[in-house]
Length: 151
Ligand code: ATP
Ligand code: MG
Image 1 (tube, rainbow, N blue to C red):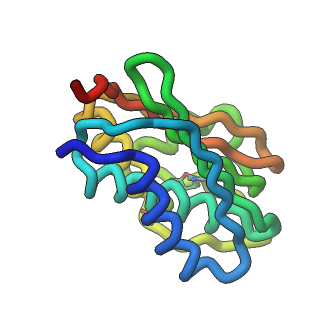
Image 2: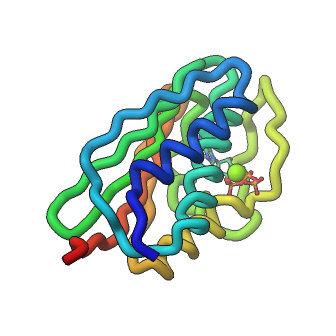
Image 3: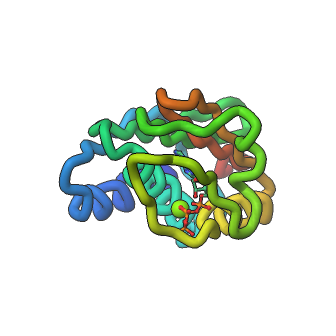
């Protein structure tokens, strides 16, 4: 269906803000316009990314969700200031059941499926997903999907 990406993201973020006690979810939206995609699944991907951003930043309180459009693509990014991901583990986090081990002060519950599922969803929508991260500083997970303008 056609939907306004920012509206959907806004609704998902407001829902998640209710359950996030300590974190502040900051929205930084560029004009995305309407896109043709699977609204529920895009919402699910965003939920996974924001949930991770909260879970893996126990000592930070800000998560920034941004959107932007470049020509025929829209990009969504979720930035946290948490534990980060070691350079050599960045690609692995998208694998089924993979979890980074050796984070000593905290245990983070999970199965290692959220990113695998999210990546699959984005691929099926014709997009891609990637991560920029510095260990100990934070991570930014991004996905971009094709967005032909509604005519
Ligand atoms: P779940 O299946 O409940 O999502 P999970 O969060 O462990 O469990 P993924 O979301 O697939 O699984 O993430 C895989 C691994 O990647 C995590 O276990 C964690 O080690 C790492 N990771 C994911 N997001 C972040 C993040 N924002 N900051 C640091 N590490 C992360
Ligand atoms: Mg997860």
